[in-house]
Structures are given as structure tokens and as C-alpha cells.
Length: 216
Image 1 (cartoon, rainbow, N blue to C red):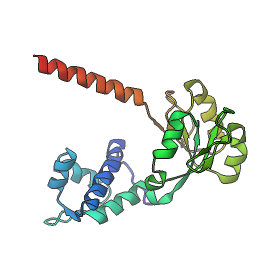
Image 2: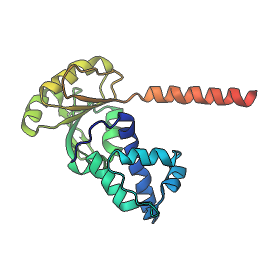
Image 3: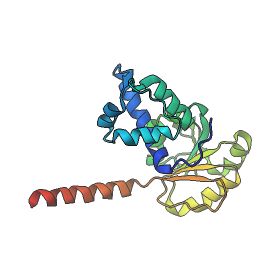
Image 4: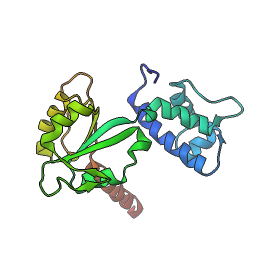
């Protein structure tokens, strides 16, 4: 996969949205679209779309627009979706089970290969065709299979200790649902913190402000 220097994280965070919209267009039989038409569907400006895609080479043709399957394929390559990076999940409670069961990892660049938990109630259970293992076996598993990413669905108080252990075992990236803002002081470690509660409170703010506006 090509390396793209100087591309802002805000642009990178928009790429999955482009990919999702392009997949929807393909499923509807659309194979060609202009930046203006795409902007109307996505709620962005045509200029923003062109600027974003120009960071990676452009891909559009003047007077033609974008070839939808080709652009989808290029964005998939940029994101590295074909790599199927090995990932493990730690924490097989309700949230962890839901993520393991319903998240299409294979379509998003990852292969979920193992699930761990420390509770005797869930160790040995089958989740998504994977037998939940005891976290005490993390060392053996990681040393043997060398996964690069970990999904954390564990209590906040356990996140720091587990994440540091995983870094020592070669984990390079974390998708963190633990409500603990991982600020790992390690070179080359990537963290995506996911706070569902923050999103819900943002929704609460927007609802209340919408109601305030309609009451004026």
C-alpha cells in the first residue's frame, strides 16, 4: 500500500464515509457520478470532495466525473481493506459479544481471530464461531499468532494494565471501548477511542437545542 505523507486525519476519517456511499451507489446500479452529485448525496461541497481525493491522486475525469467501482476500489486500497489485519477482542461481555457478532470485520480490513475474557462465566463459550479464551493465555496466543490489533471491551479500571500488556506482546493498534482514554506512551502505537456515551450526550444536546429553537 502506498504511503501518503501529510494527509490530515480529518481527511482520512472521511474516507470510510466515501467508501460507504460508493458501496450504496454500486448496489443501486450507479457506475458513474459527478463530484456535484456525490456532494449532494453526502452533504459535502463538491470542492471538499475534490480536495480530499486529490490528496491521494484525484481519480476523477473532467467532463466524466468518477467511475464508481474504480473509485471504491482505490479508496479500499488507500484504507488497506484488502490486508485483513489480524485482530483480537478482549472482553466478551454484552458489548464485546455484540461487536464480535455484528461487525463485519472482514469487509473493514480485519480478521477477528481470537476473543479473550477473564470471567469463568464466559470462558469457553462460543461467540461468532470463536471459543472465548482466558486472558491468562494472551501471552501464548500473541507470541504464536502475532496479531497486530486489539479491540478492548473491558472495564475502565482494567484498560491501562491490559493495554500495556498487549503492547509488550506486539499489539500496534487499539479500538478502545473501555471509557478510558488510552494515551499510550509508546512510539508507533495507534489508538481509536470510541465513546458511545459522548455521542449519545451530543444527541441530547442537539435535541434540546432543536426544541429550544422551535419554542422561540
